[in-house]
Length: 185
Image (tube, rainbow, N blue to C red; front, side, top):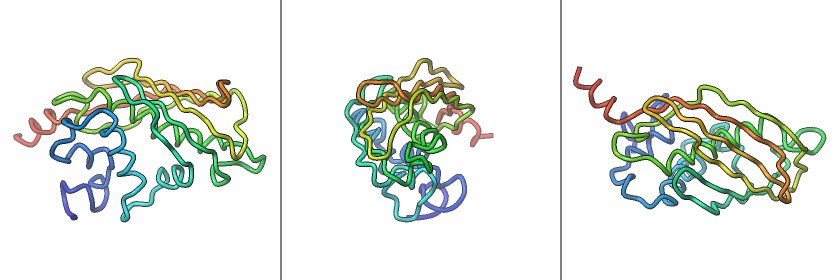
């Protein structure tokens, strides 16, 4: 499967979230299945091994909750995500939260709303406590607001119930209806 619109190819065609939405019955999937479909496109595509794929490898990531506006994950922190001090690297934490907060948007997608992909505008990180190598953490992601053009999601990493890392993630969001209207021009 390759070429324009297939999700496999080069450039923007390879955007995993766009491929998921191009899957015919995506919006008919249950909320957890939508979320897992995006994760599978990032982590299991044999033709894609990007930065986000590497960050999610060997983490034993598990979806605990997927409900409207929210996803909750648990995962291990392997050594390849850590800095020289054997703690979760700030850049790795940002990559993880970039990916996982995006999954919360999948929970509220519907025809014409959040069904055409999204890209990060800003992600603001706060590092409150170190997360040691080998830790088992919980990542809670919640949509705060989502409109026609933008969305705001908060992500939090907990270790043993203590808040360690937070982010506020602003995204530009796209509708398939906008793409259809543009294609007609």
